[in-house]
Length: 202
Length: 202
DNA sequence: GTCAGCTTCGAGCGAACGTTCGATAGAACT
DNA sequence: AGTTCTATCGAACGTTCGCTCGAAGCTGAC
Image 1 (cartoon, each protein chain N blue to C red):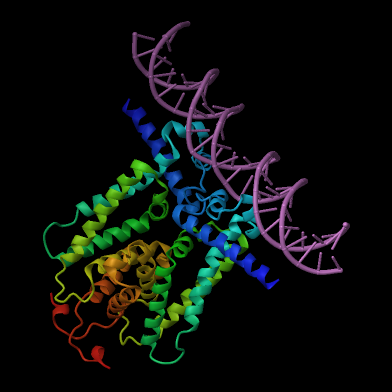
Image 2: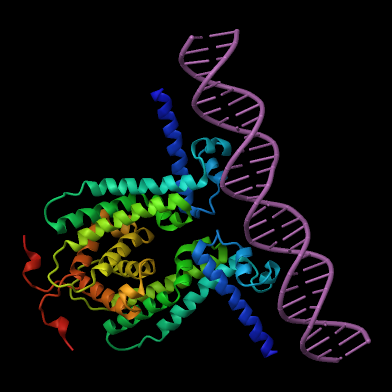
């Protein structure tokens, strides 16, 4: 009984993984259920035994991305230096994004292809995750607000979410290298310029 | 004769504009030629008189984005302060992106739906534009390379290209405000930290 | 008035789509 | 042995897709 459940789950995830890869490669609408079935070595009707619809497949793919992201966020050290917390958050986000590039491409690219309830549910989760990051940034005590906080968070997410478009391990190091560099750029970028000369010339 | 040419061009661009809006709203594959024809108040066959195929429509939409971007880039002051040049470039890029949100959404989102020659042609133009920006950044003489240049440019483009996802005029000001803030964040971010204390604590 | 060329269309083609149905084979329980 | 449940499939349904065809209407030239 548990064995059967185990087998069922394996096939279910197998279908999801193939759907994820094909959605990422061709886009949601250009990847057909027949393609997914072929990739999963199953008939079309057989695929429908596990995935009730194409929309549901897309939903499951997107949903488990948030499952993982939130699991990582839940492990943030709740106390301590806000800067350290943001660092941990960014590291986790980038690592997850690089390890699950396909899933992330689908999320950024095809989530809007979802309709009705499923879309709203995911939008809620996305807003939740985003506001979590906003909190982290707003708790950094930058002595002087050199950049509007709303823009600062958006810029940070822009940097992060763009990474799958260009990142190559051989050129850019591992995901922690990436995180370190982006954090350096971002934290210095939103900090008050030190009262050096040079900057405030002409 | 010229009058006829004028009318033809107007209809052609009318078709393109409606295609652009629908591609942006629903995505390339989800927007049908019938939808576009209906939006342009023309029959399907009539639409095909101006646009030889759906692929061609997508190509034209993407191509004129690069036309405009490159036209703006060509007006960069060729001499003078590299920092000023980058500022002008970023301002132009953001202004164009905000004024042509639909076109930009199509470009970022659906360019990969193009096939064969058309895709490669656009890829060439994109690489060209990107390397132009890379040059501008690399010519900033930052005294100390605190961030790898490859990452710096990618981070800049990440910030810029993410803007259409969140920008709202009422909250974020006009596109020049956006550009100023992003430039401030970016330029400080890639600059050598001034030898203040505070930063290099524990 | 006739003719040629530009513009527009209704109707329809073949293909691919998401999805469903009824059947079948095996395993599991009684 | 018979019954039920799980897993799988080939075949097809109805719809929509990108696209084309042949026939019109219109306009200006001769």
